[in-house]
Length: 316
Image 1: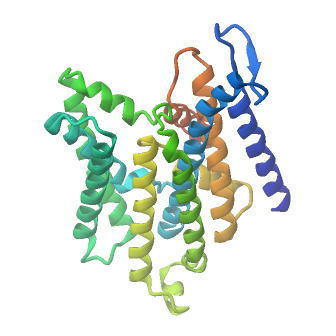
Image 2: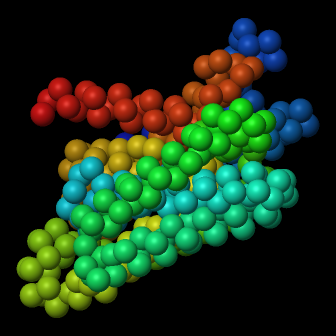
């Protein structure tokens, strides 16, 4: 594990340097290295660093949520977007655009938070009687996601120009990041990562199956409630910050497990680091591959994640 940790740290540092410093020139025909040597380069770095911080933030939040859900459910296919909270936030944005026609960023935040909260309340209400069984929670989340996604597709198919804003937001781009919020978002992500480490003993016990964990003194029902709600909060925040993202929360826990990281504390920390690295690389590739046009980081991450799982299926 020390060697794996060192490699991931070096990869993260290299990705951070590339994301901030390397890019195509004004005409897209040559690569330029941007260092804070003059005022112009300083302005370019000032444009890039908020996007980099937001990509790191999203990688931390979704990777931690993925680890929590996969350890809670003992299901390697569990991922944050299956809770339905991301789709709920998107639904809140949809209602704001089509019913109230508001454009203020604060209203977008309130709409997204309200949509995510409503989705979480529905999820909890449906699964309250069964004690938040992870399998049923995920099935409920999948149903909610399917319902909300269908409503969004209907809105997009209407041809209304307001649907273009929804499409842009749901693609998972760092392009419209507010620079004043980038640092607070990152601090919030680090804080929630630190909170997740409190659950490390629970997560280690859950790998022994529910009956054994309960015999060792773990309150299963309370643990499920706390971990599912906390995962939903992480997912909702990541969705509001960058938009709905697929595969990051599913891919990263698989990669850390493949690298031989099995203890909960180590997996949470390394997953956060690896998720940040993947998001940095995805954002950088999205900015360069079709320069001066841009592919959202969320779409690039989905392409990478989908390709990885297709390759994995060949080995099963």
